[in-house]
Image 1 (cartoon, rainbow over the protein chains, first blue to last red):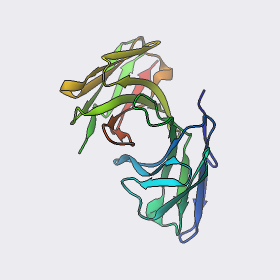
Image 2 (cartoon, rainbow over the protein chains, first blue to last red; image 1 turned 60 degrees about the vertical axis):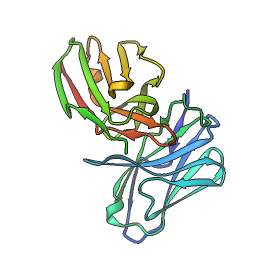
Image 3 (cartoon, chains in turn cyan, green; image 1 turned 45 degrees about the horizontal axis):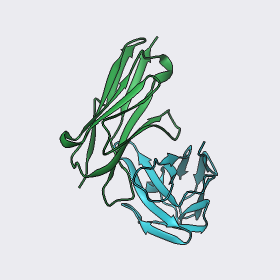
Length: 114
Length: 112
């Protein structure tokens, strides 16, 4: 079974702090994704990565950056956390870009910025 | 721009009933459609993936259909159980895109 893990289930940070969210997958997938989920807005893509050190912006990249130094690990960085970044963050992975493959999600990190 | 709609937003049915959840999308140029389940405060669990060339997929009590030309998919749940209570999300992968485009979900409650 594919396993996608996220470093924290719940996180509380203060405004202005630098925040790191970590995601690890164990199936050697090339593609990894960060989404955020908000009531009434659904899931929105922040960034994705298709290879080590490669990344592309999603729909809402402002205020975020990412890092992928190893194939299995994809980090989301909030350079200076703000209250409007309070959300559920979901990491996902998918095998090489063949159109037939499923996307698998981690358990999520509920981030609260106060 | 691809948009995905799920109606109704919430559904409550007694245990044992068969039920259908609906998903519609505006652009038929997709690679595939995926149904997910989400329990409160948790991540998404993949239920079924239907390729654009397929009409349906089955897994246990679940059956998902796809009519790409009309932009519709249904998720059929047979003999519903209280453990099926969750939010069900559908998502399409547009052609040429890496991301999934999600609907808002249907919150399903199965009453014992």
